[in-house]
Length: 163
Image 1: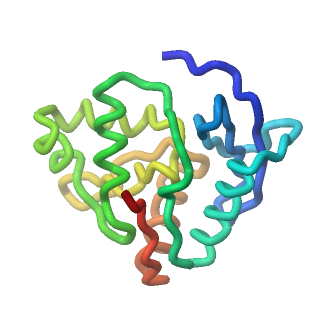
Image 2: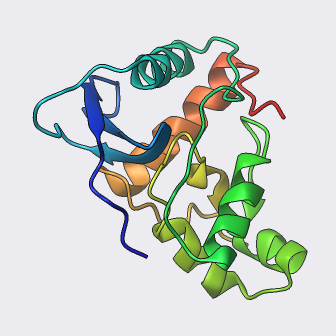
């Protein structure tokens, strides 16, 4: 599914590189590694930037007020919701998620790789059945995935996606 061009975007610096957050129709639609050109400040993008700042500082925060509408298939959105339900500092395997959704691990891996809003939709919390990291499409690949998991476990942050 092709996402319409964002109406606003903001780039923020983070320990894992510059992150550009995009908004379309009042919801976050993408988070990308890199500078995304000219920034347009909106209340939602400022809230997202504040959340990321708190996340990287290891502070307790909630995403309940950050509307997100990632473009994807129904199956991908189900996988992304399953990822969002994994508590910070915890992981599930591709197989765990596949079993819960009545799917196959490889399909879950494909949905993880297609996640347009990494970190906010925490695809880094999905790992291989052998305990290996699996893959990660973000900048820095597995190094970034390990850094995000280490951040969540070392800070003991109670980051949550409140309902």
